[in-house]
Image (cartoon, rainbow, N blue to C red; front, top):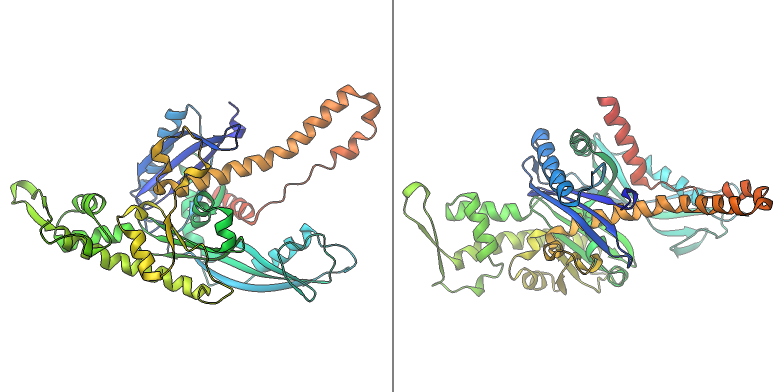
Length: 444
């Protein structure tokens, strides 16, 4: 078992922190060899509010995953979300020096770097620059301009922006837990990778990831990410409402929500009653399930309406922006009874619950295919993809070395071949991660 083929996804959520170790089997499916889960105590609405508690929770999850798998974790792929994340659209262009030469990776990189220089609000930083359609001279709607001729290269971009301090706090927690940060990924993008099919992304789909502290949205159309948003409400707000509305403690409210909760009030009869034990010898409380579902319905409706507003802002009602595949619900909050029906009722769009089991090996633990692990599975997939890219150039060099030993006459042409391994192009996230690492190293 070679460590370089193993990756680790670390999902730092508001309710739980999950560390997932995995590798790809011979069929290309993901085999999870270790999973650790800890209660998240220092994170509120996706943002670190207590560094010490977050570090302890990360260490607890990582230790559990290490003991299950027998593998030591060094670096992790971390997901980022939180109410500080926002997205915007931007168009930019470059004029190429020589229109008689074909467009290369370097031209697109120059264009992307130009977008990275956009002036943001104080304390904000561009996390992600995602190219959408390109335009070469007067020819529009080009998905892949590499290899084409043209003097002016223009593109529409989806730019994701976040607060520098929040991102650095997550980096500090990971580093203080004794881990290296190999990559940072936007959580809705990780969840989308785990639960959406390519056909859905092409047809047009909205992924709604309902977590404990936030609800993340990612909209895809024509296979391209079109819109992202983080709404600062999640399952915890529903629990708080139950706690206040029924005058019970949080633990009981959470149990009521998961065991008896429903997003559809018409489902329960007035006679259905749950008895809650009283505190310290007090009388037990009787709560009707109809009242419980009314409380849940009011808050869930608010969350869905917020999300639907974002979907409308993207332009879902236009002919070009229509989301044919509808909505996919995932995350822990998506397991609420009758949520899918309520979403379909409010939005008028088809909906389904997204499970991450499609990418998992057949003999995986059943618990892993729960929607609440969608982000962790997506982060693990991201890490394994990155490992695969790193390994490719090495394979070329090994091949060359074996040829060198076998054929003496090939020695002269070998240097030319060896100088050719494709340089691995750094993604914008990797560049950002590197600058974050430098910052954390200098801060020590």
